[in-house]
Structure formats: structure tokens, C-alpha cells
Picture (cartoon, rainbow, N blue to C red):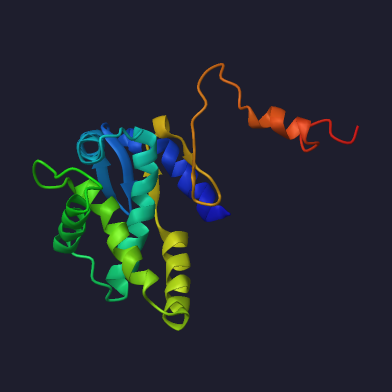
Amino acid sequence: MVAVASISILGLGACSAHPGTAVSVNGVNYSEADVSDALSQYAELTGQPMGRATLVAMLPDALKFTQLANENQISATDEQVNEFVASLVDQGRIHAPSGDLSPVLTEILRYSVIKAQLDQMGQDALAPLAEDYKEIAATQQVDINPRYGTIKEDGSLKSPIFGDVVDASVFTADQTGGGAGAGE
């Protein structure tokens, strides 16, 4: 709980100390320009847009798997990511990139390379990796620009609420008996 609170507090202030930073993961800053490059490439590859907040939320999760792979000798090189992309192009699932993949999009796609290898492992091999992943998730330091939201206890991103915007979950909780006034 304390770790989550400190992550949330850092999320409110740390990125504002580094103008132009969208997210910082374990001290590595990813700029708004990095995010823009990845979003442009994603749209080029898929023909579909992705929201900035979605990509910003995906990056720390993808980097957890990169760290897991690095610590457990699971190979997920940039070359393997490029081969994965080429296979998707060959299958007609995406368009070929016009140049090298951006570092942010490479990290997000690296997750797919790692997951494919994890999916081929037996339960005996996965059990210790699951414990390693929990430790990585618990210790990962994420600072998110407040424009994208804050980190919730489960590590997911909570969208920001600006000005007079009302959080609709309050009304849902009231209707289901979970809000203020329930049981009165």
C-alpha cells in the first residue's frame, strides 16, 4: 500500500519536474515525442489509431516483461522483435514499417515476443517466473505525467478527472448499494 501511494505521489510530481516527459519507468524517461513517434508508427502499421494514454499505460507493463526476460535468460532481442513484425507483415496482419521501429513501439512489441515464449513453457517453468514478475511489479518505479492519470493499487492507470468532470463510478456505486447512503 505504501509503495502504491509513493508511486501515485511520484506520478503527480515527478514528470512535471521533467517537462516533456510522458512517463518515467525505473528512472528512464520517455518523452512526449517518443510517445508521438510510437503512436504514428502504430497507426502506420495497423491503420488504426491508439490513444496516448493507452500507450503510456502499456509501456510500464511491457517493460515489466522485458525485465523478467532479461533476468531469466529469455531472449527477446530487437532483431526478434523485427522478425515478429516481419511475420505479421507476411501474414497480412499489419503493414510494413517505413523505417526502423521507435524505441517505445519496440518495447511494446517485445512483450509479444516474450509472451510467445512464455506460452510455450510448462507450468513448472512458469511458477518461479510468476514470482519474479510479482517482485518486478512491486518494485517498478513509474512516474506518469498527470495528464494521463495516476496509478491505482493494482498498477493500472486511472484516468484523470479535470475541473467539473464527475466520476460516473460514484453514481454506479450508489445504484448498486455500494455508495454513500447505502443501507440508510
